Length: 214
Length: 214
DNA sequence: ATTTGAATAGGGAAATCACCCTAATTTTAA
DNA sequence: TTAAAATTAGGGTGATTTCCCTATTCAAAT
Image (cartoon, rainbow over the protein chains, first blue to last red):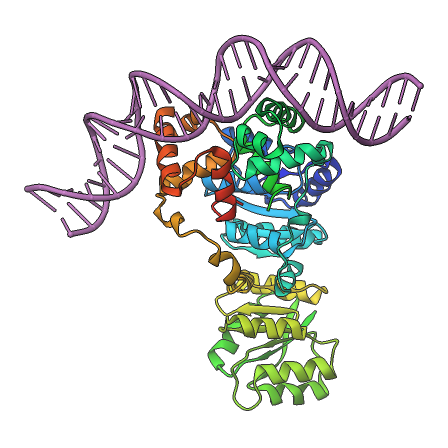
């Protein structure tokens, strides 16, 4: 019996997948998660053969989730099922070591076949995915889901973020912008609150992931 | 019933393929050819659904044969089955429009699945083939920008860096790695000294710029 | 067999950050 | 013109980081 965890934040998608996959007597959906961290907490108690993972999910996305699974549970096979077909994204996942990458346009029989192939130690990459790899890669992170919270940031706040990312302290930023270091601290606090972050590392990371920084 | 022509100059290979494929009741081998021109003459009288084509053949090789089939009989699907996994060769065939490209190391069940997939209008590229396409991707620009200081970092230090970048505090990292927060701090200090950085923001930025993080 | 490097851990101190609060001025938008 | 939002700034506190030490253990290399 092939045990699968489905991770996708769209209930319709999950229901559809469950119908398709459980039609096959060898396949069983052992759990469903609506974001990455939910997957990780499920894994603490229950180990599936395959995690069928979407990329766009609230909270922890598929990228971070996949990385964590690969590190903590290398025996669990990951198959990406997404609508994203961007070259750089595909490369990233395959190089990371996922066993499958499929577009959501995949026919159901093909999906079942892919699951069985992966379960038996193989890999499966959608033909659309392979064709995409032929195209010259354009490293635009644009398709990497940009957090909507970015829009809440003001111009000044973005400016502060950039300077923080360059490694400047509040005092240094204050000197460069001719404002008090205490003001910089206020901005910093406001930024943190808006983005729901709690330290500098998380902020810089957020900036890189959301193209505020390059 | 799926009608297939096998084109390969090795009799053992042809026999093996015939055994594997005809085991499936939906598949029938309608003819066998030992080189490209033989395939073309067969096609004059008999039209299969799929031509399973090797590349190395005496007389007309698989490349010229595939090109000719695609021009004269675009409705016939071509699947390459070969031992060659050179990037350029794979690219050439896929861009040409073949429906499948598989290495001869493919397991028999996978080959059968591929045949059925292609017969039903799909495409199938071996996972080894897809991985090969990743290889000589973009060797230049990214690698050149990596700071030589990265080499001085130990495995543990890189691990710590990744966790820092994920927004974890020393205490959290300590809990994760089952070491004292003070040890994490030591690592952190050593990292800073090695990289000549002086705060977390600069460290996270360094990690992103040097692909320690993505 | 000895040395080196890596990982471990702690003491201590100054600097910085994270976050709470209030509050003034300026800018923008309704 | 008024209200809302952005920018400015400071007081205060506890957490965290940064950096200086020393020191032990363990594995790998000479």
